[in-house]
Length: 463
Image (cartoon, rainbow, N blue to C red; front, side, top):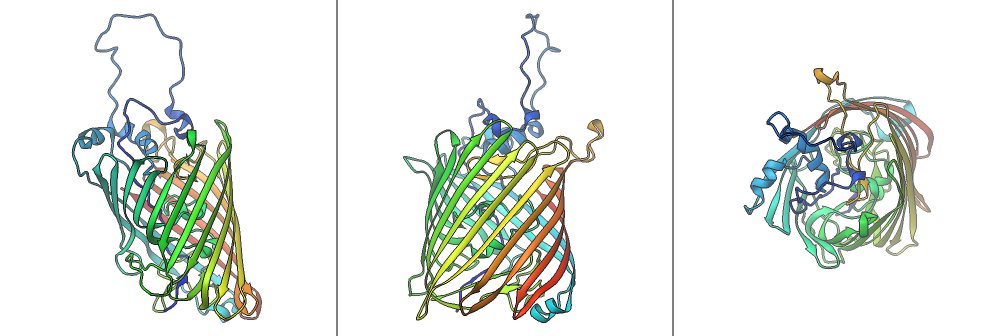
């Protein structure tokens, strides 16, 4: 049995933190500017009347602030009233989830068809997620996250128990979760800038069963995480095999510039793997798929680059990351390389990198999540369909470029360059529309400059 690493699915474990102190507010850099009241000169005191009393804060008004106060940015968090009600009752339970309905069309030349075969149009559910999370004690929380659209129907995505307020290391997590390696891999599948993660994601251990320690540096100026895990782990969190079967991973980030409208993020990661199957395989599709491209019975878009099974003793993975945000503009880039120590042969090395950017045309800015070291969504100033505010939602122009090379010595997995141009339309805090145009240049199987063009859309709702 081989170990296959490819672009599958996606979203990080985001452990719910203790119920926030409702008398405090989130740091100013994590709150949309429109949510911060302007300073004014106090007016002379006047006799108190019912008319002078400020209107009560409704749950709907409080919810965006609560979403930023907690690190559970991946899904909606309880409103203030719900948090107060749950504060003294254990265990707590909160249901959430989201779905993504994707469609895509492709035009491919004869060279591409010769390499990967016929590619059909796709329409269907990319992700259908149902998540139960809560707290068993003030400093112990849990999450059980299922995906009903993935192979396995359903498959586990995040299943873990998290202990917070741990001396020195801050948090400990045990279960089936995403390993700390890479900015795009840590990002939620519902908060990705583009339709899918770009090609360097093929060189990622991603979700495995293990134990992790993580936290933030003073003043949330950066993050750190260390994990030990079993490898490989299937979609149900089970690992088997007697030959090794372990991995170690770490990721650290730092805000080297941190101003009100300007930030620069630096980060790096490393993971060491000894697969129990004594094999590794790396592959990637062109940036759009609905089914499982790794499954031989799948009708999904096929993998364009693929190393095949590599007899492996150990593999070292390295990653560097850079992100930049200035007002309504954001960009991030990563470069990854993997050195595979083959059994009975010399080592081989593969590499990949990407850069992507987004520009908000309606004045909003992406939220930088300090507890995770990633960008985590956009809150529109005016929701679509809001007649009182003439709302149209928020519009973001997006673009990206990625390259992956899976050729090394006698391993000829191919190389591929992807361009992406797109648009994100955030109708409100719970719905968005994504449009991506993806030109692909493929060199594989002795054929150079095979070209194809994908046009893909997504309709996403969360609850």
